[in-house]
Image (cartoon, rainbow, N blue to C red; front, side, top):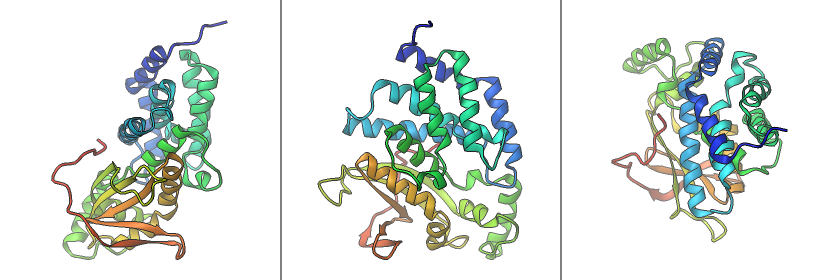
Length: 287
């Protein structure tokens, strides 16, 4: 029987994946198959990873008992980095395909079976359609969901579409959908800056440790805030549920105005009288 790797050894294995040629090739193949969508390449994987690591650190500072070493150093990084690996196999069901690929990647590298199963579950359930059907029972899963759903700005728009949108923006007609899936391209193109932070001062009740806030600088000539919130309603609902499970509320701040989800009206609304200036420096911006 093979002895279980220590957390330090397992963490080193996960870190070795970041420049592994097989994984780089899988992400390149998956992004090629996803060419009709925004980028889902290795850059996206690293953005989700860095965002998940930031959230992990902030949550661990506030709730040190919630995340053990194995969760912080092995499960979360692996789940975040590998979440879209299945696109090379099946774009439509990349979550399910990715869970299978995850096992084939991690088993030969000596990662413990129970740890692999936990990572597989995160990969299999990272999509909003799955999140909204289930209850969170793993903080690692919740963190990866928020990280994935909060990564998105103009850098994810493919160069040819971005060039067209720049021209349309100049003519002030970029708000029109000119091609299939154009709305997703437009909304991402409209996001000029994306910054995720944990704000302990924004706590609606003693039951919450604060807010996980997605701060966006949005070009509303290309896409208004209401369109962004409608298009990504399920994505942000998933973030809200994940944040609540972790002990926070989830906010979206667009051009300095913070929005909250109104349960009674079942929609996002701006917080009246609460407007903050955009930060002069970015506390955290995914690469």
